[in-house]
Amino acid sequence: MSKKKGPSVNYLDYIPVRCEDYQWQADEDGMVTIFRENKGLFNRAAQKLMKKPKVSQIHLEKMGSFIYPLIDGKTSIYEIGKQLGARFGDEAEPLYPRISNYFKMLHDYGFVYFANETKPHSK
Image (tube, rainbow, N blue to C red; front, side, top):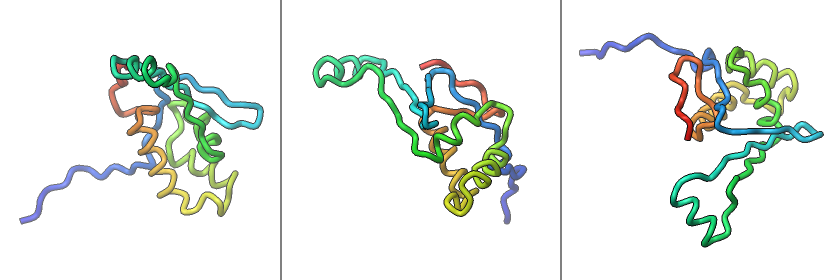
């Protein structure tokens, strides 16, 4: 007996949206830094006892720094991939498996959500 499968969804059709909980900036070379505030009881204790920062800085590498400003809540992962491929050529290959994994990672860390999802609550 075969199981019925739901409709197939192409991950490249997803439209990423930057999470408003995180501030970010690009330096003069276009390199992006995302700022993540360390909240909660454990983080406050770590800040006092182990001199951990109140705000962590996540520095993106060059392709990530190219991608992050393109996340506008309107452009699909596929379209962002086309722009990445045009900019970096063979250096970005294998393009679509790589960019899919990158967006899965951004999603897992809470830096983005997808337009088809409910907007995440503030942390």
